[in-house]
Length: 175
Image (cartoon, rainbow, N blue to C red; front, side, top):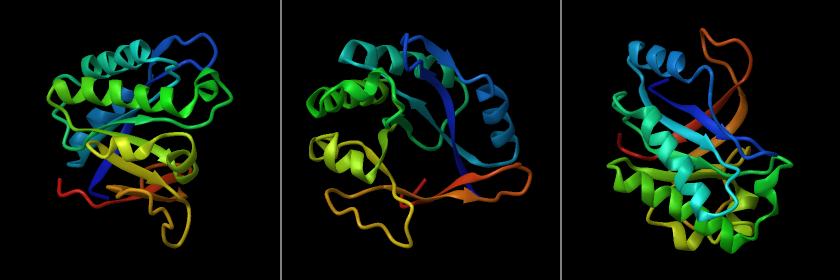
C-alpha cells in the first residue's frame, strides 16, 4: 500500500445536507503519519451545478493544510437518493462544475464511478480533462469508452491494521 483515497464527506441522499465524514480527520492524519500518499473523495448527491460547487467548496475547506498527493474525486453512483434521478447531461454538468472548482483551487480533480455509470449515466467523453477512476470488479477491465487513471478491481481486499474488507485499486498516475 503506497496511497489511499479517503472519503472526506458526502451529501445526504434525501435532504441534501452536506456532511463531513466523522472519521476524515483521523483517517487522513493516520495515513500521512504512516507515510502514505493521500487523495480524497466526496460522495455526491448534487442535482445541479450550484450544489456541485457547494460540494467542491466544502472539500477545499476540509483538505486545506493536509498536502494532498492524489486528486480530489467526485464519487457518483447509485444510492437510491436524490442524485439518482438526474439525467446524464445534468450529471455531466455536475461533474464538470465540481472538478473545475477543485482545479481552480490548485488541486487535481477526477470522477469515480462504475463502468455502467461511465457508459450510460455520464457523458464521459466530455470529462477527459479530469482523472477517471473506474470501478469494475473483474480480472481485467473491459471499459473502453475513455482512458482511465485508476482502476478499482475489488471491494474485498485485506490490509493489515484495517478490520473488514477494503476497496483495492491500481493507480496509473505517477504521483
